[in-house]
Image (cartoon, rainbow, N blue to C red; front, side):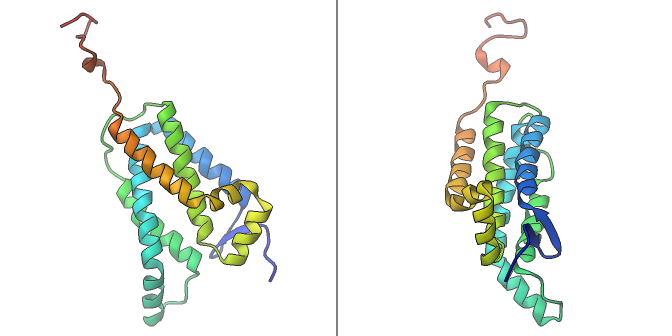
Length: 180
């Protein structure tokens, strides 16, 4: 069976290089515009979405076929469940200040994007996974290190939670920079 050079999620086809750069660039742009607090909320929502998609895709697909709904591609089912869970969880007000761009947010954006690429790659058919991994180095790096990206993301979220940024009023100085 021969596949074209596009990732297939149901009827949606996408060039793999465009996909990688769109995901990483999108999260980097998101970090620049909205800051670390919003990105942390999205990262946690994606973690919950990954878990839900991995655990519920077969269950939902089986029950949809029992009620007469046309069979949905397994990759598309994972993407739908990921989206249905992650989008509502990422909405709403983010705790902390938004719009602050830092090295911390760049690292977080890179880890979130890489983890998303690795997991969506794992949703594809095995033949498509093998072809994409041999033809595209960036996807191969993400896919071969999927658990490392996930572990790194979780560890970085823990570090960010423990390593609080110093607020201007926490440095012992008042509004005009004088000691209190």
